[in-house]
Amino acid sequence: MPPSAPQPPARRRGGRRGGDADTRGDILRAAREQFAQGYEATSVRAVARAADVDPSLIVQYFGGKDGLFKAVLDEAVQPHEGVGRVLAAGGEGAGGPDLGHGLAAYFFGIWEDPARRHPFQAMLVSAASNEAAATVLRDFVRGEVIARVGAMLDGDDAELRAELAGSHLIGAALVRYVYRIPPLCDAPLDDVVARIGRAVRGYLTG
Image (cartoon, rainbow, N blue to C red; front, side):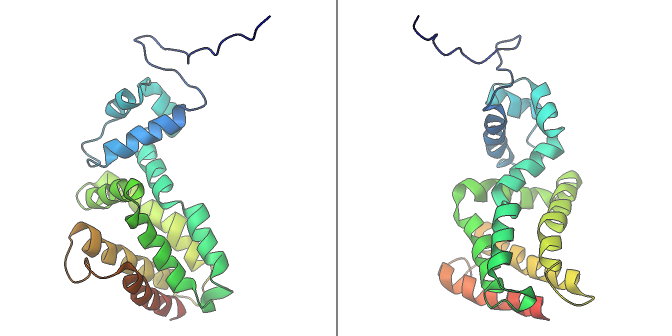
């Protein structure tokens, strides 16, 4: 007997697709496009329509809009893979010779990738005017990035130095990619990464 043909994904009432192996990825792709328009302009229902799923699936997978926002941010920043890899390659403790440069190259690499830059940019801009977006972004940056970097540093002010480094990176990215203020927006990427990498290493080494 010939093998049966692949069956189409299950549909919920109203024609929307139910949960399957690809549903989470489809929701994240739709959310990335929606959040690129801003946090306030994005709704769970709009993301569900774009992903062709029932809104209840977004709640099931992500807990709601804030959880979805954090998941898109996590996908853009990839702290487990990106930050972890840079910290591992930076050497032992804060003295690793490539730590500042590695963090700068990793961070600006996000902004150079349009697929990751647009939602990240929208989230940073949204956080400036929306408290819910600011809370999610703040908790994410502190928990996933600053805490990871700070844990590698010595001294009572390790967390402060890690936060200063992160603030420098975010501020420079806003000037270069969002506000487009010259000469920073026109400077060669390698030059920007080298200069800011030295500044970041200065923060980390104290």
